[in-house]
Amino acid sequence: MSIECLQISKAYKNKSLFKDLNIAFEKGICNCITGENGSGKTTLLKIVAGLEKADFGNVRVKGTCTYSGSNPYMLRGTVMENILYPLTLKRQGQQSDLKKVQAMIAQLGLDGLEHREAHSLSSGEKQKVALGRALVWNPDILLLDEPTANIDVETIERIEHILLEYVKDPEHTLLLVSHDLEQARRLSGETWVLKTQGLSKVNPKVL
Amino acid sequence: MAYIIEGIKEAFALLLRGDSEIYQIILLSLLVSGIATLLATVVGLPLGIYTGIRKFPLKRLYGSVLFTAMGIPPVVIGLLVTIVLSRKGPLGTYELLFTPQAMVIAQFLLVLPIVTGILFGTAREKGKHAYELAKTLGANRIECLFLLIKELHSSVLLAIMTGFGRAISEVGAVMLVGGNIRGQTRVMTTFITMNNSMGAYEKSIAMALVLLSISLVINGLSHHITGGKSYVD
Ligand SMILES: Nc1ncnc2c1ncn2[C@@H]1O[C@H](COP(=O)(O)OP(=O)(O)OP(=O)(O)O)[C@@H](O)[C@H]1O
Ligand SMILES: [Mg+2]
Image (cartoon, rainbow over all chains, first blue to last red; front, top):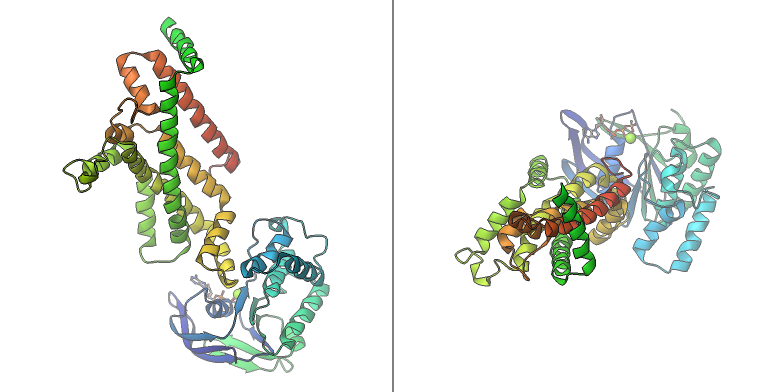
């Protein structure tokens, strides 16, 4: 397993989201989390990403890990520059970087938008850019919060294909929040429902 | 009325003649305020950004103190620095009082809260998302800082410009710690004050015109950066 949550608890003011949560997420599959609005899915993902702290407990994450939220932040500059940014942090050769970015743009169907100001994109386009930005970095663990919330049907198919390709690598772990149980079924990994009592495994086929 | 017009005529003559004392004073002013602003930026930029994006206890109090410190009267800072640097003061042995170094120290203290405060404010409002993005992509602290400087670059420029504008136009601090010594610590504002009290209006006016031009350029640039708004995106 690549993500392990040990006895983690989180509460805001007087609202308890989860208590003594123990869960491990497996490599090589898509782990899908679903649950009611406000049940703490985003918070859980942020805790795993290290952006929020659990009140109690530990999270063990093995390998590189990145998070992309449902309302992603666009850096100043073009779509191209946004997707290139993670690679500049890795300091690899410029030539191969640009090729990777171009391939990612084509894969996500963002052709033609390469030189657009990222700030001026629609929310669906921004989500695609954010996904590309996370994927191009090739993390061991990918945390995605409702990555297809604002996306058209055709592109959802495209993105799900990319995500299935991603988890084909047995070293990759995908942890995805989605309200779409059909999507969970299509990505066919493990599906969990988050409730205050904890995470319970469900079979999306029978729901 | 006539003496005002005479004064302005004389002022232009003085500037065009290339009076070396005047140009030396302008140069010293630019150097002192420039170095003070540079040092304040080196410290205040990372400090403001870092404290703006981080959560820590008493952050609100820290913010209030910082915003209050942005408005400290220069003459109070001048007094403080004078006490510390005077012979009997804690740093008296360095004999810095009435030197340009002392003026840099005083203006540094004046500009530091301005640069820090402006960046703290913007980073607190707008820096968190960029910071989280950099962090989730494995950026180290320096890389996070550089990304934030890039993302908030309008505010960075505005902070520097505001700080420099405040430093170059203040008279209280440089007067107290510099002493307005001819050829050594005399700067534009103390030159104006002195000539004014001596009744040498043409010299005051000449220097005031220079100072005014510098201030206008700075304000114009700030206005350009913010697009005429009172805040920065
Ligand atoms: N910084 C915060 N301060 C106080 N309360 C918060 C904070 N962040 C989240 N909450 C609360 O915690 C609860 C869980 O929020 P979270 O965003 O994790 O829910 P979610 O499961 O992702 O919901 P959704 O399906 O709507 O995205 C909500 O009730 C929210 O109001
Ligand atoms: Mg959410």
